[in-house]
Length: 94
Image (tube, rainbow, N blue to C red; front, top):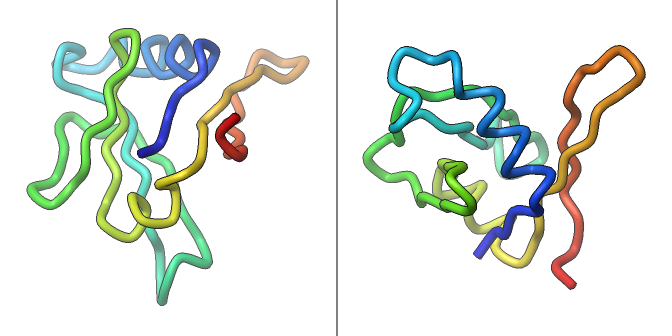
């Protein structure tokens, strides 16, 4: 199952804090197009019915079935650039 680093959990909490229902909202990772060649991340108010839910340190990630398979043995990390923008990085679990 996908794991979250402390940095990723904090970034997700920050991103969802301003949503209408922060207690249920999270980020959703979903496959775009054919297969798993492209994954997108968006803020979601709640999971879709088929989504796998990953929770860590008060942060929620919703994974569509394809993304859940692709990210099964991965870890999600986050960092900030010089302008304060958040970027997410998928790494191998350690």
